[in-house]
Length: 330
Image (cartoon, rainbow, N blue to C red; front, side):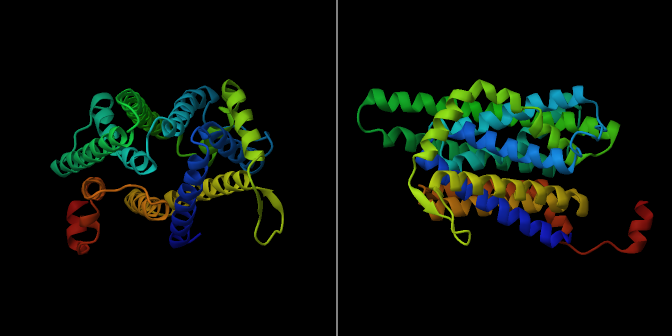
């Protein structure tokens, strides 16, 4: 597939996924578990058929390593979705997760003993400042929005702090998982489709812990108002339609990222994913009328400028080096 087409899948799938996720979360804020379970189940079934060849294909990487990776991946996914129950708005949720560069750099320095250029440290400073501004402004909105009593406002603020702690934990765990994957791929080679399948199939038994919550939300979804599905002409509860579209768009998004990583350098992938996050943020703010002040815009701008600085996109759009210079560098 042409890289432009893969980029189109990322923008279409990921941005649409954010819309359907917020439609679900606005109606039932605690539906994170059923959404995560549906996404995992769909991708696991597809991978079992297409990648694992109905269980006949042996994995290239030992299962015990996938079990470690899966424990991290499952924890990150559940924690990120559950944070939406803790007074965390969707824009703040997306902005905070954009801080993955910070977590990756910190753990890279601590675990892998890496050292980075001055521009990398500057980019991390910008991202950190942007997230701090947005977090501070959201904290003020949470406390000011609770006008019934000081006790209610204080309780809401405590839940919000717990949500921030959950996002921070998920951010660090995701970075640790990335480092673990990097070491595995260095040893065994890259097997992204295989990893995608096992990362979604192996955690499925873990959802038994959330079976009552998943069942309760399934009942609530079934009781939602009926919706006539366009083109198909089939009627189904509207929340099930939103969930189905969320699962499909999530799969399109992940597949687009996988295709792009096989067709383009990592710089291009990082840039496209960063721009996708920014577009998702704009859609969330405009379409759902989420509160967003000038300070939020300032923080958001710092986050994405810092991310672009980290990817060194400015160097990539400059004049191409001459062949003589390339020969000297070699």
